[in-house]
Image 1 (cartoon, rainbow, N blue to C red):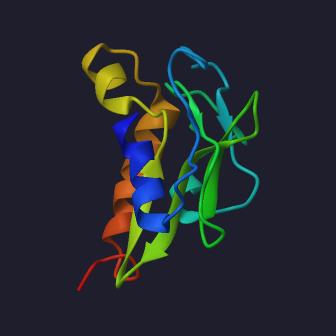
Image 2: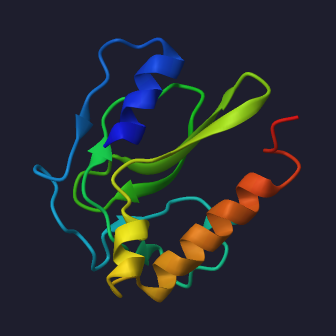
Length: 128
């Protein structure tokens, strides 16, 4: 959950709270959902997405765009917000690196990771 600690540092919020793998363990089947169409979710065929997540963030800047939410809590799992001349992407609780290595990554999760990287590399998100 080291990535979720960044949000407190960058937003100036000293009271960040994050729910880790001990509190929200091993959710995969229909674990997250998206409410609004977004380039990161453009390849999805369903609002409910099966992907490996453990936890979520409970604090985020008001300028953040929430892309994915935890199905059970409704809290953000994937969000981004402007910072300086670029953006900060926060993938709180996603463990796609581990699920990929252990042959547990779903097709929907592969598409989310691909579309996240594509979106981040677009000219609107590049740090220049």
